[in-house]
Length: 87
Ligand SMILES: [Zn+2]
Picture 1: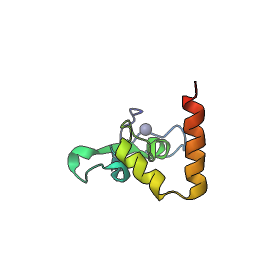
Picture 2: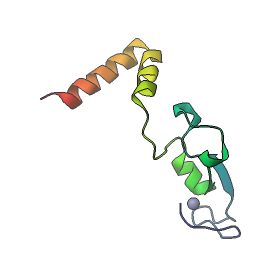
Picture 3: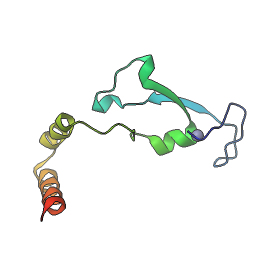
């Protein structure tokens, strides 16, 4: 993401860059555990990208999360949606 290479000094930490392997599409939203769904990020980018992917969650996944949520959280979602789509 930021273009650093091994042996570079991380601008944020002042230390030698470390790399992490992470999922492109997170397993929580249906990403597969396979090589094509993995990427390498420096630790600074990885911290900023944690659980944030370019992939949008599916409607089915969103509904499953709302169904699992508690009553108050479901009401907060309903309130937010009503506000967002009021005309
Ligand atoms: Zn980076």
